[in-house]
Length: 611
Image 1 (tube, helix red, strand yellow):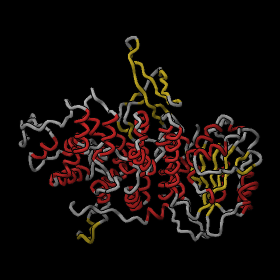
Image 2: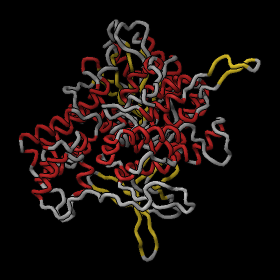
Image 3: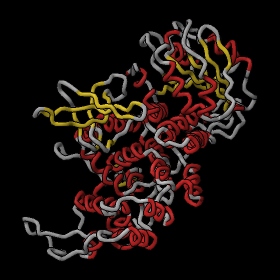
Image 4: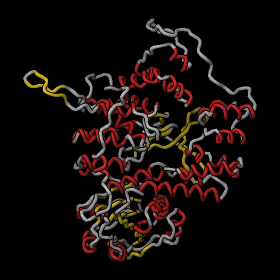
């Protein structure tokens, strides 16, 4: 894949455009929970690519292997030369890129970032949420007094309150910043690359220590509130956050009000070398609960009685017993498994024959119905039964449809797929990608075609991956490239209704000299934006017909990357953001608001009353 990032285009973006660019470009993970290797990759916005990896001792030497997924198998590829091997944790290059995007928006419009952070808090994008919370805690709009002739005449806006609120507010839907994410906010601010950006912006006064802003203060408030509400602290321990809470205490130097705090955490205290500690030194703490020595039936009884979450359950299981059919059934009956757990465990449920039990099968189906990402599609490749695989794929299809259901109202979507000769090596990938997102659009508002020098409409008979795959299965690459044929041969015959806007979505490598602005103008379709899924062909990036046309028409072109499809969370999220980001035209009467208008209309977060 070749993706060029034009620095002049980036520099010309205003705050609204930079937010959209970040939401639609950012498809990587800021945190990797397994080891990997990093190599230079100019196609990535942050300049590098991470891949999972491992190492082995071979003839006395440490040899690294990249782990590549090929179908259902993982293939080890031996790496030679200098290898940039990374342990699990934050990915500094991605963190710095995302944080700098936020910083650039802040430099253009301080208040815009405060609204962006308040909006992001309600979304499911954890990396963006952590980066925005960290930034808001350290940025310089902190309620400082404004003076005239030595007298305070008013106080500046305190946008650090938004960062505090993001860290302290609890949400019933689980989209709040949990203890692990709260710890990650501090880890992010402690990175050298982030500290350097903060110094550039004038945040903090130390040339040696990273700027932490109100982070220590907000963690202290968070811990104090849970100490004062013991059931909350006990709930964190039960949910498996015991060590995370301990790490937060170390991060901010927390001193509890009572030694009971250490008892709940089962945290044995030792005296510091300087003798400064005075609470709970040497006191015995309760042993961790364990099911060691219990039989399978007794463990099932404990599960029903205590209702532990799945993570805690697995941690307490004796290795000699493991996750048996009866134990897993008891866990489902006790409600220990979340919807996500049930979908992930589908192969195990299938192997143990639990899906054939009506109550468990119904619970599993409900979990599939509630799926909000495309993990189910990946898991479908690992199950044996065709019926089970079909239900998982159906869950992934529904996740995409749910993601854009609200935003797609009042919008007619035109999709053109390049099948010219330059796409010979890429057409298989393009077809695979289409089956991951095209079913998200209502068929009544969707016009799809393929084109080379001529175009023909593609009839999708069912809004599912199977329906999309069937519609494209007979097409192969060949012929020249004439993008305007899609407009003149197909799109112009299906104009949008008077109360609809038009979004043209292009899939291909845009290898055509010139542009198609004249054909688009003559069609009378008046698109408000282009979407462009760049699928690299075999000719390299020599032309830019799609993006050049958008520039000529004076409309935005939202560019998506193939990497989006490697992340089960990215497809629904990015597709939703792309549709929401599409400008609302003058003629539309539909109840649709642009994403930027929604962000600007979001009320700034405020701290909870107890804080």
